[in-house]
Amino acid sequence: MPSKKSVKKTAKTSTKAKNQGELIQKLLESNLESQKKQIELMLEFKNLSLKVDSLVNLFTDATKLIKKGEEPLSKKVDKLVSLFDKAAQNIEKGEYRDPLMNEIKKLTKQNYDVSRGLLLLEKYVRDKAMTSAQPMMTRKFQPKPLTK
Image 1 (cartoon, rainbow, N blue to C red):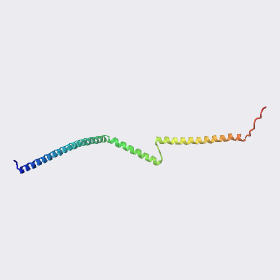
Image 2 (cartoon, rainbow, N blue to C red; image 1 turned 90 degrees about the vertical axis):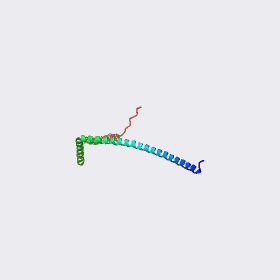
Image 3 (tube, helix red, strand yellow; image 1 turned 90 degrees about the horizontal axis):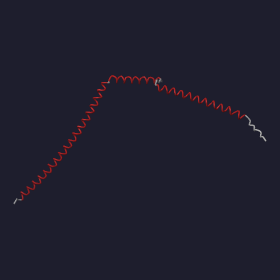
Image 4 (cartoon, rainbow, N blue to C red; image 1 turned 120 degrees about the vertical axis):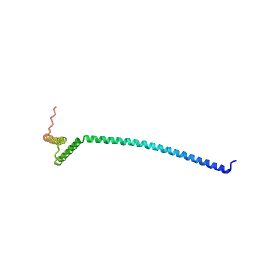
């Protein structure tokens, strides 16, 4: 029969082995989770690098376009600046050479002329109404004789 000491040793070693087995199982699970997270991280880096590549390509294309059309673009900007300079000078002088502004000035003058004409017409009509009403008021009303 086995002695008490050997039974205790076997029990201790079996619990120790059991604890080690659980520990190894936990280590394996933790390692697996870590590997999953690393794979997710690598996929995200890949997506990010693709986006950065497309952004770099966009800037490269824009640079090529700017270099290709550099001269005409600067001429256009110079024309625009000179146009604004001329406009600023005209505004300071009070001269407006804008066609729309000229049309607005013409319409304003026409509006003024029409309103003056309407006021003169109103005055004329009132004067006529007053002069034609005065003889009627000054005339004495005589009734017609009754016939039998």
